[in-house]
Image 1 (tube, rainbow, N blue to C red):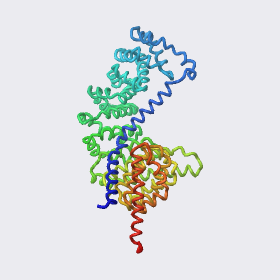
Image 2: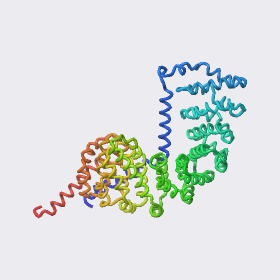
Image 3: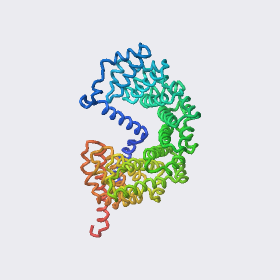
Image 4: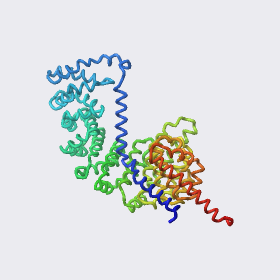
Length: 522
């Protein structure tokens, strides 16, 4: 083996190790929940950390020094005194900056739970539940204090009750606690409360109650593990039935629950037996583009199916029996047409976020499909879906400034270039992919998360040692952007950029060698 061949082999082995270590974006649903929780924390921080000069006069005059006395009166006073004091605390909790820390220091949580367990006064119960809702929508720390005060049995009592307003407020409080507290979810399962919620679907309740129940079930699904799978089996039927109803909220919540159920193989196969995939495709078929949240939830669930399914034959069967690619193409085309319509009318296009939200999920699905079988690339190339996405991005490169869209496009390209052959990669470059990668390298030159998959895709292309591919990349000045990255502080980025530049020299040297070899005077 020549030194030239050894160098190429060494480069390929090193590259393989890098790609094996790269497993980002594998926990997509968990990231969505984390993102939602972080947004909630930031929002609460903005709401709660208000300077005194920005408060309204009434809020500025909150008698904080009277709070301990109010709480003591609620614990030991008569009914009339309790009503007045709870009403005052409700007013204080309604302010923009509620003093939850003072509430916690004086054990208001425990006093409220005691009221909920023992009082028969409807007015008192209503105000107590109202304050409990405010607690549960607060920070993680404050929500956990509410759970540790023994609120779970008290809230379940009202969820099982017949008074609608108390039932709704109890659902809101418990759902928020379950979202934040692993311990609460474990206790919820151990005490058999899951059966109470499941049984509600066999009873007559207002639509809003079913939505709250589905939300609560989706939260509990996060505690699914190998040992408690049988407990969750009834949820497969519930979520599947809800997918058939024309209720956007329940569809989104069911999708969240289904994603967590699919983390266990047994539950996944049960869901597939119930034809969940076909139902998800049907939802995308009739769903108007304006229902962005529902569309995104359905796409995330479909991506989870391809993440879990490792059998190549099954993936090919799914693609053969369903019109998934056509449905995805329709979403892209509808969004594209809407964008151009607004653009031509010179109106500010407010709905570009639809593309930023939906296209990343579609690209994620495609790379999950490619991961299962390289031959699927032939199916994708023969379909217009990829071409549709590439053409839109090429004509509207400013959309790639969105990190989530840029990130998923680069990961899709990295998978495509890794599993495709040189002709397939040349096709995707000619179709506009290289233009988008070039724009991404410019827009996100300081974003490590985006740079890594962008460089991985180019490195895969260079490994083909194809002069046409190298010329395409050079034509869009990618090498000029990549060369300075060899001094990047991130080791993976600097290493990848060096390998790409080395690969270019190898291709150029090989070309020069071939030309000289053919020259008679050489």
